[in-house]
Amino acid sequence: MVTDAPARLRVLEAGTTPDAALAFFDTLPPVAVDDLIGAWRGSGVPTGHPFDGALERLGWHGKRFEDAERAHPLVFRGRGDRLVRIDPRLLPLGAALRMAPLLRTRAAGVVFAAVRPLLTTTHPQARVRAVEHRGVVTAAMVYDRQPIIDAFRRVDAHTLLGVMDLRGMGEPYVFVLRRQRSRDDLGAQ
Image (cartoon, rainbow, N blue to C red):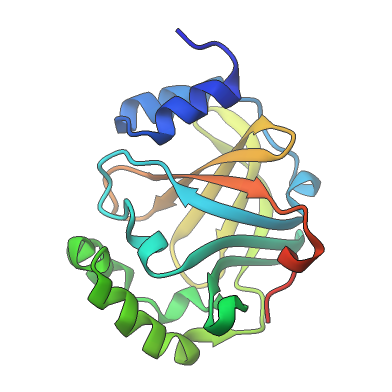
């Protein structure tokens, strides 16, 4: 059995079950709100969740935290790999869950790229708070206009494991955030 957290995460990123991902999440230390500040590159952890691979197909880049009051939950790659922020309230998440297999298709990526300019915003769409999640108080992103809370735990100094809790969704969506170190990666238009 792998004992260090980054190595365990690499194993899980190859594919796992929701129970195994949550068991790993539960072993990780909490994150302080201030530790989230900055830009983070995201990727899903394959657990059999309907969203597995869908966000990546649509061009999801990650998340950005300016401070506790100004956070951007959905940063996507736009034209020319420019980073843009998407307004989550404009996304029909219920329909997305029902149609998730279609979101992983090339056609969905093309359609999303065409409508993405209509979904962008420059305004923060979430806040960060310390919340109790799975028995531990840790930093979490609380979306402003969607019933979503993303709770985070620390894998190492530059890596977080996140669990998306969406009201009405059976299993959580599990994802990884890796801190962006390049100045070019820090901003989204």
